[in-house]
Length: 205
Image (cartoon, rainbow, N blue to C red):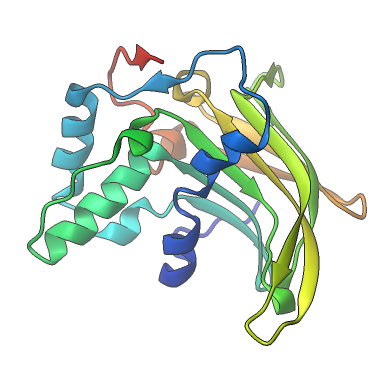
């Protein structure tokens, strides 16, 4: 397993809430999506004020320069934005869509020189029982550069309930050419990097 806490800040800024929008790529799931209460948001922001923004960039799996897998949570995303604002003596107020209480998994790297295509993502508990996503999308995405160059990358987005992943989990993912990889998120990482152990009874939408 390879894990990197710090990835390019510009890349993080572009990807940090992408998995929220990914839910719209698939018909709505019958499973309800939890929403953070004011109490949980306050707890996240209180924690973030004493940390640096790069403490909340999530967990990633690289192959050389290719970002194959990115695991974040909206709790950590709020922490990221709160800490970044605090460093500039500013205040951050999360938008409604940012308060969806989810763990977000993105598989694939669309950067042309570092491209990685992903076909399948599965998430399991540490006992290897599979966890069903709240939303899942796997599809080819078209990209066009500023110079007009066109390419297509197959990417996967999935969102999960924090409660189901809070004790740690394992991500199995497969490249588009059939190479399988495994990425483990320990209970410590689930608690400290994704903030999944903050006590909360989330509202349901």
